[in-house]
Length: 358
Image (cartoon, rainbow, N blue to C red):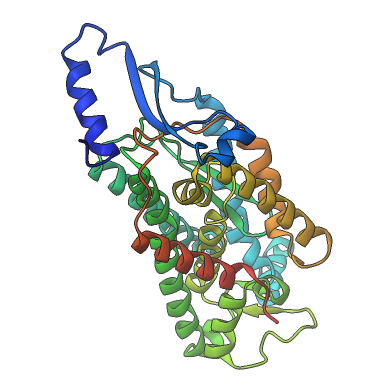
């Protein structure tokens, strides 16, 4: 008697390796993907395990040039956001205007001031992607290159990392999906805290050269806004418009918090969607994805997302995510309670980041 799906898959792999079709077919141990009848529900026979046999390669076709173009646009948006954050600083705008009128404009100092924000934001995403690849390497499956997703509000919406070969089981899929956002949130929180500390202890002359963000944008995150008020003074983000000078690390940390929290939303083939699939199965994950999209759209339409960060993300994901996800070799065995607890903690953390400051 087999102890579980993993043992069954290994046994069948050994048997298949001894045949002359091992390089032509692949099988998956899945819960029956066909719709369940009323009789099957009544007899508790829905979602029975089945073996699905396919060709060796069932990874979705991806258009390399399209992905490269989207990623290029994403990088351009991050760079534009880094420069745009300087435009909210009137001292820097006046300096550039004076140089232009005098015919001595030199944009090298603009690049120097924008570079720390751009590079730190890139580091948060690199840590995210490196964590994905580390899990894939550990569990011996392949993940492709990420597609960087742009954002009109923060420059970066995150990235979609495709699966090129199947994870061994749902536990592996969960670990792969959770590792990126969790490590990204940790490094982003570190950047934001460090940047706010540096901002607080800067002299007036140094602060006058800092980039700036609108208060409304910072208020879109309860966690990020709370950190700003905790370290820079309660009430500093009071409603009423305006901007606030921040160290580049704080701005990059804010961008990283938003993009990594967004990645945990249970939508499509994103990290959050894969976590949902590992917890609830394919059928329920699709239902949860649809409900999540509806909630995000309604929150944007009825003023719960003033910065329209979530609404923009929904638009990108709806356009970009149309291919089905490659299955795990074993999707029958459930994840353990420790991973369920981690998923709940991740959902709570993402909520703190994405819900607006009261």
